[in-house]
Amino acid sequence: MRVFVVGASGAIGSRLVPQLIERGHEVIGSCRSPERAEGLRALGAEPVVLDALNARAVRKAVLETEPEAIVHEATALTDVKFSRNLDRTFTQTNRLRTEGTDNLLAAAREAGVRRFVAQSFGSFGRYAREGGPVKSEDDPLDPSPVKGMRENDAAIRHLEQAVTDAGGIALRYGAFYGASNDGLIEPVRKRQFPIVGDGGGFMSFIHLDDAATATVLALEHDGPAIYNIVDDEPAPVREWLPVLANALGAKPPRHLPVWLARLVAGEAVVMMETEARGASNAKAKRELGWTLHYPSWRQGFAAAYPRATASPATPTRTPAAGRQPRAGHRHRESRA
Image 1 (tube, one colour):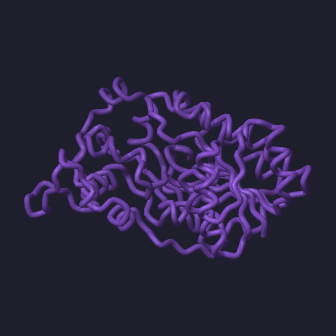
Image 2 (tube, one colour):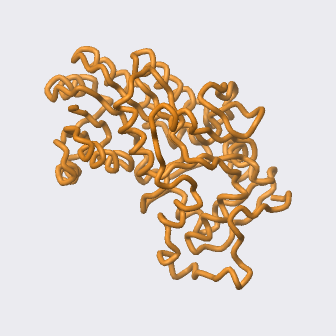
Image 3 (cartoon, rainbow, N blue to C red):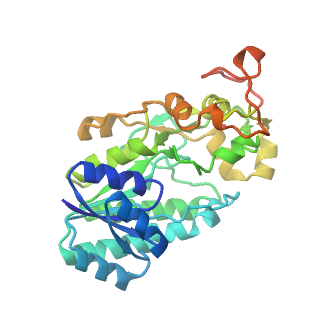
């Protein structure tokens, strides 16, 4: 199959292109700058420099390359600085999820492209904060997103609706990890990512390689559909954050009361760390035949962030020193 991967030079796109080629697909990969084109060519893709927000350019690229499928992985999160207002952080990405998605779908319709897979999101409080801690694709989304996440939520909903209405597939990825520039690494190493309140908010993770594998399988599956692309172990912040700190050779995370976190970090962070629900991958595994290389973040963190990479400022300590929390260790109420 001839596949056009939009955002092919990004974190997941660069993992996806080789897997598609290995599977026997021919890949056209888009990037934002000529400098990244050579990297895509080295991966085996035919590079195209493209701004997904330019409707005319998108139409021209799709009509000229004649793909049989489009995979929309375009975001604008490289080197972005996260703030307490996630809507501000995701401004450009939200445009790619709305305008960019509309541009690509319009071009796909004109070119007769029948397969369309797009990046959505299924962690950080997407699901309603009620009932059990783990949600399926059939469970309701949060009807009242907190301040600082409303525009982001609206953009993702737009993408999912537009894609499925067109017969495509939306993939609700968990929180990505596995890249050297993951956004969690430095805050955790510097103890700037505390456990808020009881740390009972659930997170669903996914290693980039496993996300790419699921995407290849989704591309070969008929839509419309929505899938949670997450690992087997949704977990509260109080469990996964100390394990990540340990994997990075960092000191254990600090603890922050809810009232102080609300003042310092904002309502969105408090919600994610105390109320967020995780996601189930049962549907994706069942319908796509998906097998994960890293079924849990417990193995994934250890493989992705060996303690040998810890900075000199945060020397590693052995469990015998009594400094490192055990995997799955639960903290008392006080406190992700």
